[in-house]
Length: 61
Image (cartoon, rainbow, N blue to C red; front, side, top):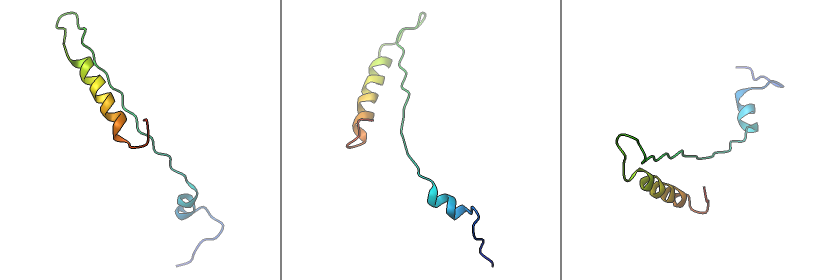
């Protein structure tokens, strides 16, 4: 099998690409519903946010 030179093969692209990983979470907690208010959604979201901020050691997220 003949190798191509000077082209942009997949291996060339893989060598050149730099991958930056990021993590994000959208947490929504709503307690205040007009017909059926809830009591712990906001507290649950705050607890989850605190947990997620501690998961990645060395990173504040």
